[in-house]
Image (cartoon, rainbow, N blue to C red):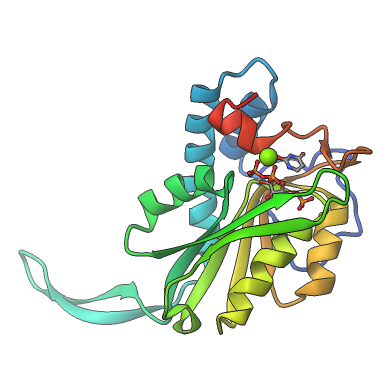
Length: 225
Ligand SMILES: O=P(O)(O)OC[C@H]1O[C@H](OP(=O)(O)OP(=O)(O)O)[C@H](O)[C@@H]1O
Ligand SMILES: O=c1cc[nH]c(=O)[nH]1
Ligand SMILES: [Mg+2]
């Protein structure tokens, strides 16, 4: 019998939407623990996020189709696999999505990139959009929407809605930490979107922050607090 990649944290809620993929790889879990520490400085935080993003890229692309082409090695010809099917578009939710985008682009250098600028109103916790730029051919691509934090889920749902409004029908969402509330909200709004996350934390506090979480992802990446 195969052992699980990493033990599930004891407090992981059992009733997660079926579209949730928790990437429990020990390397990711170790690096995430370093990121959570409040004394980890911005430069280390950014580097760890970049490294985890590369590992998440591996998981989110696991089902990408391949086809065989004929190539010549120095010894002979052979049928060898290459990526086939829809090309990718990475969609970064500003600001903090940029931290994941960097690592993903290392693994997926040919991907197109879109940006959705959103901030969360601190009182209503609703997402407020201030920027949108998506590739023209996004309807022909699989979009991977990137944001480290899925808290209430309002920002993720709004970003996915914009990608859908641009005609894209194949969408995945990648984050670092999700709250159960956010997973449920995103699933209700967009049941067709699979969420890849390194962790599902306990709950949201009264200000909509994920507990135990990592704090404000944008501020920790850019050192703005
Ligand atoms: O699930 P939600 O409740 O919508 O919260 C998550 C959002 O909050 C953070 O962004 P923030 O609004 O802090 O903007 P920033 O990236 O510019 O700091 C985070 O990067 C998400 O976009
Ligand atoms: O915990 C949280 C919630 C929303 N946004 C963040 O950056 N962190
Ligand atoms: Mg922020």
